Amino acid sequence: MPIIETINGAVSYSEQGAGAPIVLLHGIQGTARTWDTVAPLLSPRYRVVMPNLRGRSGSVTPANADAYRLSEFASDLSAVLEMINRTAVVVAWSMGVSVTLELLRRHPDPQLRGLVLVSGSPCVGNEARWFNGTTAEEVADEARERGKRLSLIEAAEPHAVAASWQHVKQADFRESLSKILMPALIIHGADDDQCPISHGRQLSQRIPGAQREEWLDTGHNPMAKDPVRLARAIEYFVDSL
Image (tube, rainbow, N blue to C red; front, top):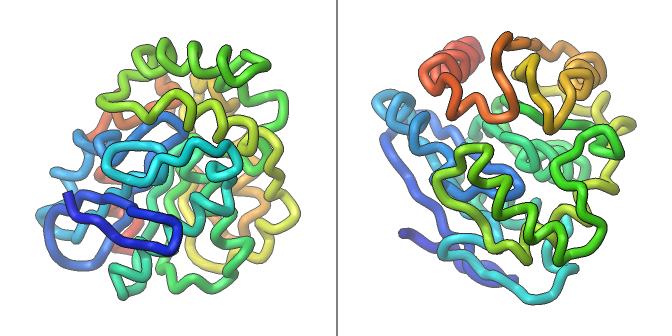
């Protein structure tokens, strides 16, 4: 698996195809393999890049909980975009949405063509219940069960998940969304029990000109539910830019 060497350590990624670049960004427990069912559907037409943010397969995995702040994940994503060296579309899922919004808050013009934000939130708060545990140990234990429930192909290190959750649940991007001036598509499952559909609606209402799709009979992980539909939605959006 290729590696990007950064000042903070290695960021690994996988890649398929050629053409206009699309970055597929996993969630709080996922890895690049989150996209195993979607990437092959996009790679005949696009260069598909799937990073492993810190704390998972092949990337730096610090022991320090502060290394899993959203600002650090945003730095990992920035390194991937610099490696690509072309304006890209970022497709982000779950925590990946928070990472992308953190990048945009810090760098309002990161040379992106557009965004597809899947099952995300502008402010996780108390409504999005990814985990119920109050300690790192409890969250790490929950993470093991949650990975199976969400049909994750490969999962991050439990301690990285627990540390990430402490930072993600405190993030609030609501006031910065109006500054996002690039095309955006919001996709959210009507049956998402991890992040209520109201959060997807907030994203689309606060990002100027954002499109929104609400998918019936779909939960938090549309990649597992209907990868073909998701790939086609991404493809249609990218082709419209």
